[in-house]
Length: 330
Image 1 (cartoon, one colour):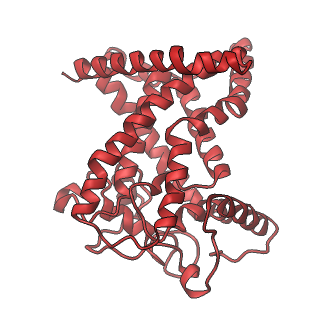
Image 2: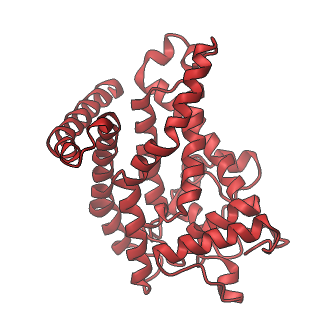
């Protein structure tokens, strides 16, 4: 059953990707004299298709749920509009296109050289030959691997002061909505995407499967960030990250710092709370705290009101952290 669904969805995706590539991106590229970049353009058209579908689900499903059971009324609409800009940049493929042209060619050259030296990459599918030929088994295997990686990357973003200086852009949103997931510093995103792309190459995940994993993960994360008063119940909260579980992570003075005031926090899992449970960072409480960063309230620290100010201030915090001018929670 899963294989049939997977094949059907894949066929629809490929058809839509080909249509957009042939009738939109390819004519545009040739008109602009960019015909040499067609391979990257085809990949970008795939992210564009997935982005449109994600935004469609967000608008038609998540937004009505927010209206039905909101945690709080949204008072700062301009901040939400800024988050929508971030969403457009990421979900419609603009960031991925930038990544294709900058970081990914470096990886391709490095791994190309390694192959010429007789060094290959590990294939996780080889650990369970035959079983991983089943589409859903292989998908779940890689999904769990990337979710485990995501947990530790997320912890590093909170515990390394220089990385927190960038990641704080994400936590500076004081009224979370379904649009808040992509509110990140661009440099933070480049580092994050680079790590995941590198691991994908190392473990041999197929490009189409990697795209499916990113799509599934990002859609779930959009739901987690929703202004939605909902949990998954007594047992469900331990199985999948809910909006309540993740809101704790964004809670002022709770999600981004330890009890003694240094960088840290709780509820770092992207999809599976099991990582937080095993590594003792889980916090299950039945409340929906206000979100943001503590020094926004106590010290009126400015994290920027618009896209460019948030990016510039993030770089300034990064400089302060590297050269020792920043506090633990700046």
